Length: 193
Image (spheres, rainbow, N blue to C red):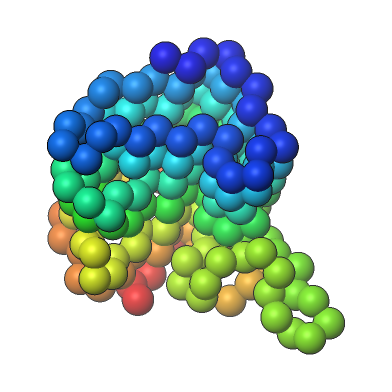
């Protein structure tokens, strides 16, 4: 259990939850932490059954990441009642091998992917096209996360760069449920890539 921690200024992740490849689901809890200004992800979950609740996650490259490239995957995680804002890339990013049945619920996810375009026209620190926005569900050769529930979040003001939507979902993902989220008029809530 990580409780009421303040993690900032690290070269890589603020918090990395990584279980041994042969075992999954250590049931880690991250509660009430402030995770900001880290060089990579604020919170990086490479395990199953992790709870992230009541945290403030801001000014990282990506706010909260659920990813796994090897068995047993990163499934059944709960991201609940957090403030996730002003990250360079996505607020919440889910993708990789067996990253199934994750829940993103009751969060305020805003003003992520608001990278500055430099004088050469390149985006500075925003992530790849299609990888930007409030919540990104990512599918590639290593796997496609199925069965994710995105419910009762406030998703607002994400992106001043191209393809920065409220929620981005690749077309080959199954069983994603988006329900009861709030977004301001004029912002796309979901797209398929």
